[in-house]
Image (tube, rainbow, N blue to C red; front, side, top):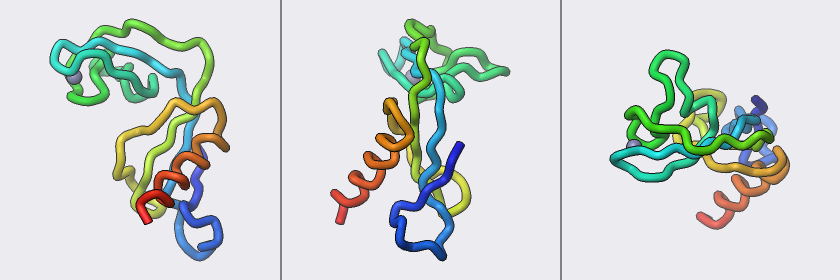
Length: 106
Ligand SMILES: [Zn+2]
């Protein structure tokens, strides 16, 4: 996992974007339907496969063989405040997407 800043020029601030590589998984949830997300958040070691939206048990229908990249926004230097976004083919693509999302809000 690597940390980045939304504003790369704000060197004094703590990082607020976290990017990590993971497998891209598709699950089928009885309540939410087809959902996708990073394998690390869907295949829980204690609960098994869970829906990334509601957290209930789900059935894995597809798992990519290649690593993808995901990001989420965080309280600077701390816990995430958004759902995971992705998949992206590279860390650079994920970071560019995160910064473009914020730029669109301004
Ligand atoms: Zn669900």
